[in-house]
Length: 144
Length: 385
Image (cartoon, rainbow over all chains, first blue to last red; front, top):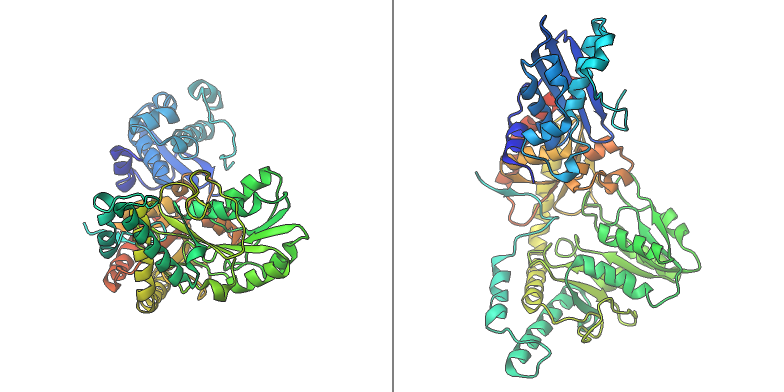
């Protein structure tokens, strides 16, 4: 049911952990739903993601999408990172089973929340809307 | 990598002795039992013998055994077969039934039957007072599973059957998990209908049976040539039926040896998992449970991820998490025991079988704690370092 790439990211997840004194942190999901993802980022002075780490409670797809999104955005500009969608993460993994596309595919949302957190913390509220065109909608998975 | 199979509640391997008994019935003795020629008579004799084996194992009469295509069909035949003859009224089922009973009850509900789902306690034992109070004047049938597939809890079936009879209802039990693992005697239990399945007891998939107590009138749900005393039309699955008979005879013979061995292995696994891993909740009843069932919930960790990590090391287990179940809902059984969704998502089941060994338990106990540790280190819910 999972692609080899999903299983690879699940069994050998990349960038697990939390960045101390992170520039931005985003968390999405709810333990009641069975998935919680937290992504922390360090941003350099050129608005590039210098480091990114994740912690995830959830199924194989939740862990794999979290791991994949960290790999996809490492070193990328905030804008490039902001443009990555949940769907793009799933595609980069070679697809996910249909029943995993909703609940377990929220890693890009967590990343976007981390970028938003960074911008707000650094007094750049004005940039939020421009960089994050498609902010994660408030839905039942949001823990905020 | 070695394969350690700890998922016998899902299905069991066909015992080589069972397979041997089945093999002639594929391409040598392939006759249709309904035919009068020699090949037909051979097949009929084999089906009769299997029926005698199943009846003997359950303490039933041969005429009280109806072969079906499996546990799900048996449950559906019991509920629909009994109730379809009657004007819609009321039925009582437990809150932790297998989907085969649960969904059949819901389907009956859509046809106009009122259904009460009786709650269970924290150990998964049905609340006897609530059960007794659930009956109404128009209650026709009560169905409570013998032993639960998720948490292993065994119900006081004889008492439940007695209460149902006092209230004027018939009593069905889904004994798919129990038959072959625990002594099951339909006369001692006093049940009217009892479902069993071949592949849970080292027989083949695609075959099951329903015990129908003499005098309990059912209507078929499959109409046709009138096989199985008109209760289940369709040419008999002769190899499957032969396999089920052989498997149940073997399981019954070996039960006195296998059961205490599995119970020791079960209790050892349960105890040592709790000793080696902090914040683990043992699910189900401490003693009134299936000999091979070890179920627990591991805090801060999601079940499917445990299952997949164990799988990567060769251990086959099951989980009650939403993801592992294929739906988006966590196990209704774990929730019915009064646990939260988080605990249900973190639930895991080991179900042992007669080929499992102490060495396999040793290997599991070595492999599992580091997996939980790794997943907890990855979990944003885990607070300790």
